Image 1 (cartoon, rainbow, N blue to C red):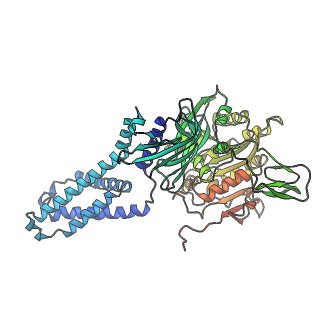
Image 2 (tube, rainbow, N blue to C red):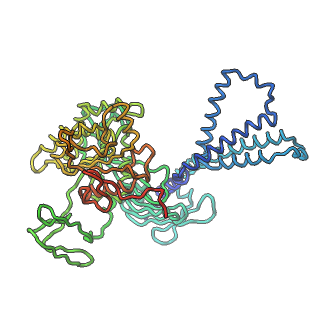
Image 3 (tube, rainbow, N blue to C red):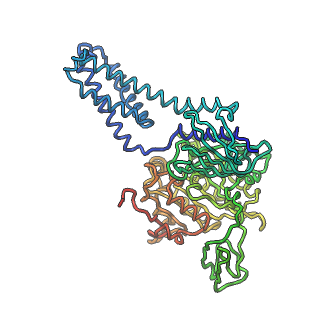
Length: 619
């Protein structure tokens, strides 16, 4: 029999987390208006000081030169603090506006109420301060104190705390909300463990405004993913998917120290917003399992559950991708039983059948992600999971894996850059790839971002040897190599590294942005030579003749894109839908840019742009 105790506490914990943290808001315009209001209010405060005689002019001489400097530093700090607070909760702005309006309306004849103009001004000013303080206190209580108190009180006996009662129907219950006497209904349908807790695949439905409809994998009463969920009232949607990781840092989220010869394995569940408003506490990482070199990495791969594993319906073929390869008809996912010059396609039971072809069981593939500078394992998993979830997900046979390397912290750029050439780190990278192959996955995509691309390119000789070695049974295959805003030297790549990569795969792609602020800073301040990610038009051999020889690769120029892209224009591959969809197509269909015509337009030589209108163009 279903036992709701632990599960209802987990569901309410998720709900309280969403309510307390809230969702992202567009803040640029608010920031400007708020700053203007604060400056305006500050000017009125100074006016009050002199107009109402809060400080007499005769006392102004007490401000020494040193005190004036302190005051000059303190006032901007206070203005900045109020600005940041006002961006979190808007009532801070409303009290400022109200106080300003009242200051405008104070007249001399207000003395008829028994108060002078000076006294009324002081009352308004201090009332404003009290209201601001009360607003902050209420916010802190609602966001931090209330959720923690409720979860702590409900820990011992959630069924009694929430007054859970069965409705008489299988799997359906009612509970009492804290803020109302009305009873609300929830239900669970799915697998249970011996204690009656949700375990395995199940669907939970909470029939109240901030409840959710969650379908996916549960363990001992708690949803751990993979799962999909949406809020009952709003429809805001989330997805939790699993990411494996191999880390060579010295601690779980250490970004500076290399642990030579040893590595940590693991699987995390990452929950991301995918539709509607995006919640500020997502992506959220949950550790599912940890391991080390004493345990095979294949154990982690086996625990990379996929949401499609819970769909028992037969997988019918309803669409085909057909092309001519070496004068032969090729259909993705099918093997030809002989050479065919024509196709006969029929429909049987709402599925397509192709005469002379049989459907393949896809071989497992690895999406091996090497993150950039200043990126922990958890942050790397968040980036990759957000990209995959917004792209509609990867097929079950493609396994996402993060490589955690000591990429430094925000002030350790030069240290991180020097580590990319460290022989021990390159050996650790190769050891991680060997672990992937030993787990039974020999088909590998390498995806790298920013300084992670520099690490991959520094290891190109080792990668070439790795993919060229091995017997026919265990020989690894490099399916694609993709660089996202790569922070690596352009001329070294074009003249030396490219040929070795091209000997391994024909699917070489770069996503760059000529206005990438981070890469331009590296190019002009530190390297003093072209960087790959901000020179999209220059992927050619060093010009010996008059006409440069452009490389046989694809360069996607994202400079014109302006949706979900930060002002620095360096890290957007996990949020910009144009880039995400193109990446997913590249990884799944393994098509060159010239074949992805539904999204890309050929600009010149090996450079492609995106079919996109600027965000400010509206009907």
